[in-house]
Image (tube, rainbow, N blue to C red; front, side, top):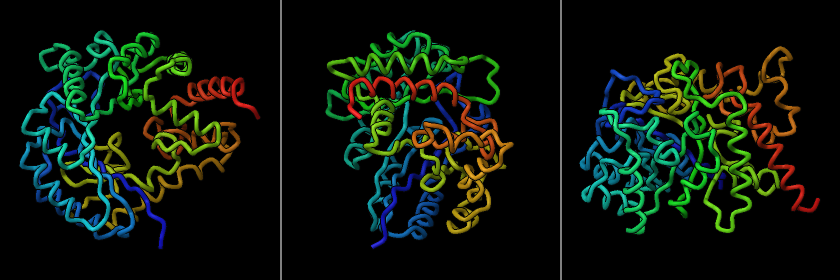
Length: 361
């Protein structure tokens, strides 16, 4: 039997949203929505193309995916249940539209729920606001608490910006309210950052190293999956599974917008030069074997060119942890390093030195 893969298909169901986050990368004027019929066409093409032993993770994303309404999800879950393969589903939502009609629908269909929360109230409300300008922290935190009270786990993504990286201890302690939740970090990156929201040089490394020390010394540590993964990777227990450091994310990930256009991930949605094609117009075979995906899947081949910024990657002591970093956080995904390369090197060095003190050779 052929080895199975876990493939993730991120559906950007809508570019519309009920918030006005300062770091949002979605076009502010274009608000398209994925119809159920188009969703079904796309999923059935993917389901028919990939071997049945491959597992699917269908991620509902946005914008704000709860804007799609209960009818869309009822029909979508019914379709996923018909597939002969193992299909898991996830929704990444700001939670503010989750109500007593929608929640049972996701719970009954074993759909994993994830949200975004950027630390303390002050940190979070700097960037994640309603269109009126009011902060959303209290409303989001209360909904996470309400889910936990009902026994529904909720993962949290923390976007790291200049609003929170400067206070690592405050950030760490603010997450203690959600002990038990799986927390991951996503450093903000925009090629053009006119408002100066990104962490400054060295800021990400300083934040991660201090928080790692707090986490390692904590008698009741938070579920910080990035720290767990890096620790395991440096100990040789397991390769880091996060897409950021996989090196070959194009082999197991697709992002599909509401028009059916396919991209490497949601960070590239709208980049027509990096589109694999449109699943409403062409076959899944044509999309998966597109020249763009083929080129991106061999991104690290550029390291063979001495003039390439990636040329130092294969000899880097942390290549097995990083694999060139995230191509979505590079000025050119085909030829440049992750913007935060120096920060990650500093962080990995810190973790390795710390582990060397407590783990025998």
